[in-house]
Amino acid sequence: MRKKLIARIAFSLLMARWRQTLVAAIGVTFSITMFIALLSFMAGLNQLLDGLILNRTPHVRLYKEIKPSKQQPIDKSARFKDAHNFISSIKPKNERLEIYSSAAIMAALKKDGRVLGVAPKIASQVFYNVGHVDLTGVINGVDVVAENELFLFKDYVVAGNYIDLNNIPNSIILGKGVAEKMLVQLGDIIQVTTSRGERVQLKVAGYFQSGIRELDNVQSYCSISTTQKLLGEGSNYITDIQIKLKDLNMAPEVAKEYENLFHVDAVDIQTANSQFETGSFIRTLISYAVGITLLIVAGFGIYNILNMMIYEKMDSIAILKATGFSGKDVNMIFVSIAASIGIVGGLLGLLFGFGLSALIDMVPFNTASLPAITTYPIDYNPEFYAIGAVFSVLTTYLAGFFPSRKASRIDPVIIIRGK
Figure 1 (cartoon, rainbow, N blue to C red):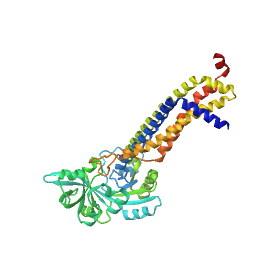
Figure 2: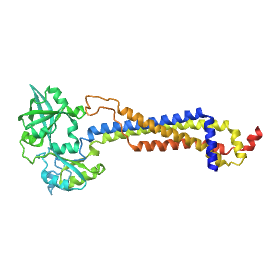
Figure 3: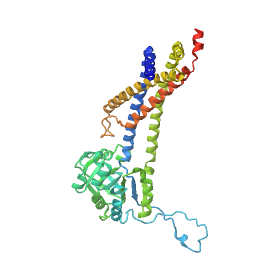
């Protein structure tokens, strides 16, 4: 009964200044709306930008790097064992880029329960011959089916069919930038020169566009068998093994383990793309900072409104305390007012935030560099709505707590005697 009475009194005081109450609720609603929309858009943008690289990057890459031997012949000599040996102009070891026993390594990887999938790859530098001009480039020999399953290969093929690399002998999918420079069409025959000086003719089966201009200007794709023939190598020649894990966070640990186990070089996705993770973190941090600032500003508005309400309702508060209401009851009345503003404004803010996000998601976004993207990216993560709801209640509670504590300490005798 007492709680119902406190609720009725709080509602009466709330409606007595309904214009100010409405302004405070609108402030909370606007803050939550912008908080949700901003975070949803920024998270969607992060996913888009990171996806340009991360979707095309293996969690762990096994390869063989040509580098000087760590131990020189003089280090093996007992005569100079305790001496300081200074050697200059050390040349790399005469080794092939091929990963030895690649078939056995891939078989072992597929049995590892942490591995989601494995895709072999051959990277080879070439020259694209355009009349008397040679354009530098890279041809990636891939297992088309595995590449598509693990790295969404077909989503980046903007013309032609990705599976034609398997179906059409000696075919190539050119990077969009390379195709534009060479002025070639689908079905045209181009000529490339390998690093060994051999010239090979390839049929253009499609265009590839990653959205990163620097890559599209040099990279192209062939099947593994075509690339092996182009390089004059056997069917077991592989330069890279790309690994996707079930848990991305395990990549650094797994990379070190595979490096020691298979005696190859290994790099994890976190190391290879650390700059993108830093950019995503900073953009997300800015979004949270702006959203929380909006909520704090709305909280100050509620604080000012309740302060003014207490100043104007001194007589009412004195009468309440004189008729038996305790300071705790008065405190509860004004906290209830602040909480009501926060809950109503927060719920409307969540609803309008979702609506604004959906509206942004329908706005056309057409760019030649990102053909797969048609609208602005939005991430409808429930976590954002939970955070918005918690902050709306928390900030409005704190905004009402201090004025309500002031009201609970009012001495009714002093107020009535002053009147």
